Length: 264
Image 1 (cartoon, rainbow, N blue to C red):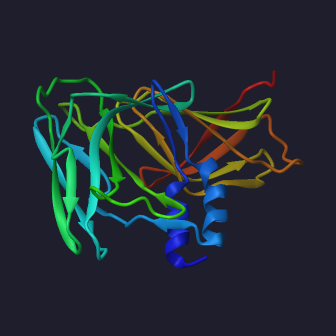
Image 2: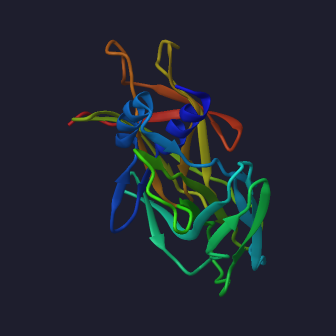
């Protein structure tokens, strides 16, 4: 498998949950790997995005980001903004007009850049941070002939946050761990008015033994919402009593108690 194919496999393994549909691309990755091995896959170009996160102050009516096509062919895409929330431990994306992307359709020549503006038409005030996702879907070239095999079109997702007026807010996290039929779950409730980007998580038992749950980025617990992730623990892990979670929250180290919920 070549380096470019590995990159395609990494980018295509993603999950997007919307109010009307749930699309799991991770299931496609196994098929994708088989197609790569047989030479039946054409990988789409790789888009470069800057910045990788957009923040708007309460008084900002617009912002923007730059898309760069480093390839040797034009890149076509669709740009949309969704309201981003979390419910029942899952990510939810819903159509919105709070923020509008312009242009909604892009055509970036080879080795060129495209500015995409994000405009807030109404600028409604809010007491807590508002969260959105900018989705960029690669599209086939106009009048492109159907290629042999399968062409993988990539989707890029950029978090967008609108801050409330007033002094800076902080996340307030309540951690929990529980076990359901499908295995262990890590829950994070954010009672604060600011998002929490969570990474590098360890669970520490009463004897001081640490279990590494995640070394990189786990995800976000959005302001005023609850998120849940499946985790893997050793079969002999002693989960119960007083336990501590250590993590990086918005790039700052955090160590606090975690609630172990009784098993059903």
